[in-house]
Length: 111
Length: 114
Image (cartoon, rainbow over all chains, first blue to last red; front, side, top):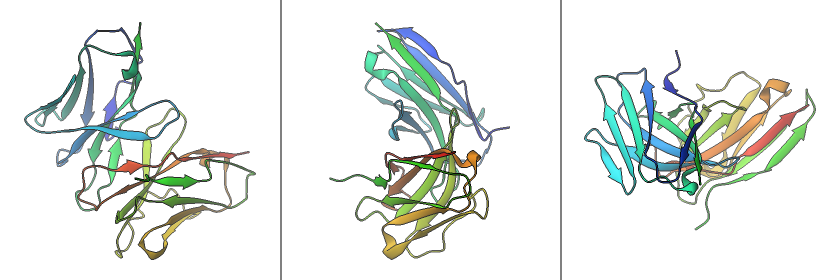
């Protein structure tokens, strides 16, 4: 079983739609969680951290369910520019900062 | 300011040759990471440097892979006797320290082994 699992998609949605991505992780001791965004043939960039109480950044909302070891990302009012691969990321070790990446979920927003 | 830079951006080599990939982290960042991303796969951790501490090499796939970081700044990843399965994008990231939540990635080196 992979340490971080995501549905690879692709998710094809129209502009303005709301879309949600889910992710599960296997290590119950994990403490820190993130969503990164990766555009085609580009490097990953931090989108947002995920906090236990849930957090929002504009149109993006991240949720964490520790009991189910489940992380989600909700994007409201999708824009064409949101088209990218969204990587669910778990901190593998608090001592080293080693990140464990999911395979990514591809989002394509259509006009 | 300047971000993480990597060179070369692309490298094509023949099976069995050695290659060196370079990473220049963001100035002042003490933590440096190497990852690789194979086609259609997620990022795979390779090695981590933090200051003068011994590196965490737990992700290196074989003894053909090695890395060093000179003067706490520039890092080189060396792959000896390259194999076709080494073909991937090699990404370097840096962060202010190991406890920082944000890692900043370079553009990567796309390695193709023929």
